[in-house]
Length: 181
Image 1 (cartoon, rainbow, N blue to C red):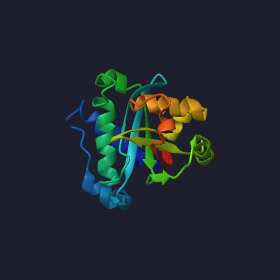
Image 2: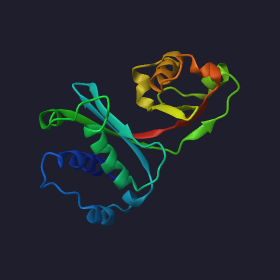
Image 3: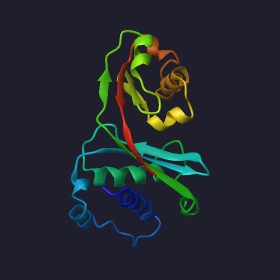
C-alpha cells in the first residue's frame, strides 16, 4: 500500500475539523486500495517543531486499518489528554508520522537480565502490563531513551507504575512497526 495514501488519510482526518468541505471517501479508498480493509492497528504521532504534539493509537487490531487510522489521526490532534486541541495554524506546521503495528507477542522471561537479552532497541515497541494497567512505547522512543534502563524506567513511569516495576515481573509484550513519515 502506498505510504502517501496513508498520510493523506491521516491529514484529511484532521483537516475535516477545520474545513467541513473536506470529505474522506471511504468507499473509493477501499475500492482503490483493498488493503485498507485489512484489520490493523496504528499509532499517529504529531510533531510540531520536532516536539511531540500528540500521539494516539491502538495496540490490538479490531477494525480496518482505514477506520483505525482515521480515528487515531483525529485523536492525536484533538483528544490526547496531554495537549490542548491542535489549532489550524499549528496543523499547517505539524509533521505526521504513522506507525502500523505488528500483532503484540508476549515475552516469557525469568528476570531482568533475561528480559534485556530478548528486547531489541530501535526495533521493538514494548507494552508493559500489570494489575489491569498498561503502558507502551513505540520503537521510535528508543531514539530519546537509548538504554534499556532509561527506556523501561520511563515506561514504568508512564504507566503510573513504580520506577523499578520490572522487579515485580510485569507482563511484557513486544511489537514492530512500519513507520511512515
